[in-house]
Length: 137
Image 1 (tube, rainbow, N blue to C red):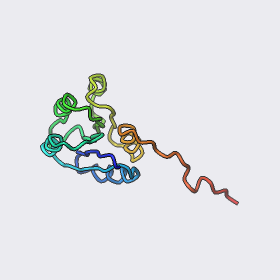
Image 2: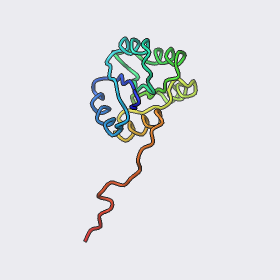
Image 3: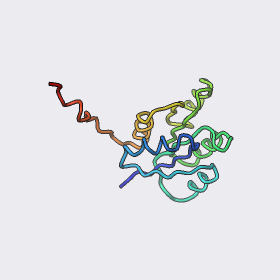
Image 4: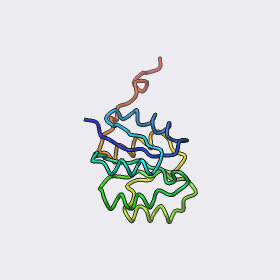
């Protein structure tokens, strides 16, 4: 059975996350664009293992929403933040256990795959790519 996650990020990184998650075939992702859609999803009874959320959606911070969400559920949160976010703010988010993991922009696909796999308890195959086994002649 596939594990379900919710992705609520700005459009400029939505495709990058979508492509990265294709490496995790056991993940089923639901994409939303706005905080009100996210609130609606969590008012339903669907069981999600994690949420990938941008620190800013529609020009407003998602942190207050995440605080409320963490009070109501035990969902794991991966927060994507911009590089101009202060170190103190990042530390506070982690100490207060509002987020379970943070990725700074710009990021790569491996960071997304690793973070989502950890949050959802998925073991990633550590096999070597085919080209690592070939010997040059």
